Image (cartoon, rainbow, N blue to C red; front, side):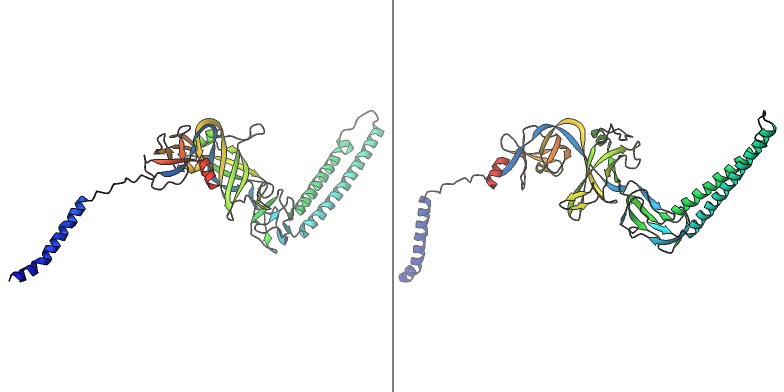
Length: 399
């Protein structure tokens, strides 16, 4: 019985002794030294904001319109016998170039009849003058010391003949004018927007042959706020003169995936405020938009086409003190990250006066000399510690 008991208790005793030994060894082992992991700072690239005297730019948008755009109509009636190749939609034409030829047979006949009328009137005038000369000589022979009356020497008949000659000459001039109007042309260089007629069609002075516009200049109607108008130094009702020219305007648009620019100038402003938008409209003009005024990129020239929607930017005339910083420093339209003196991140809300591709002009929220972050910041937290890096250090590292 005792042997059975010891055989059953022996394994338990061995396990108990081993467990106790392990506990004693663990208690005697010194605790490992705890090492505090140092916080890794975020490196940020910054630039210093600078206070400068600046001229603010005014940005707006508008649609290009033709300065002269008309419906082409004939001045006389007739059947179309020929149409120039240039009188087609999109084609250009020169000043005085014949675009449409009307049948001129009737007008040639009218000229011939008028010429005959002039010749007949000239003969009648010669006869009247000859008769008046004879009458005067006869009177002087009979009354050498007495002056005759106009009626006694046929002066009224001469005046009547002269009047008939002038009337005949006027009819001839009118006939020639109508004959010249069978060749339909325009007094300016332009392009065709639409063509409404064809060869063989009979037209009258009320027939719209097509729509054309001049290409000597185009204009863009630009909406401006009252503050923008003041920034440009323009009064309401302004009209440019040789001594007082309007500010220059840079127009830009994306055409065929390529950014293009054209140079223009503001020539006038409206004298009233638009009742719906409460804005004031200025008109900028670009000379020769299909020629010298076209945008040139390499060997290709892109005209400032009528109907194109463009962005416009003009530099203000008023100088003011403001803080200038790189465009990359502005975030979410009005937020700027600033590294303070303690190398901690400060998130500021700023008042933006103007933005361009390279810079931002700030009215308030940033002071001269403060360090503004220009690099990307992930999970920015106000007050977090950072490692500032200047633009110079970033450029050197890239090189």
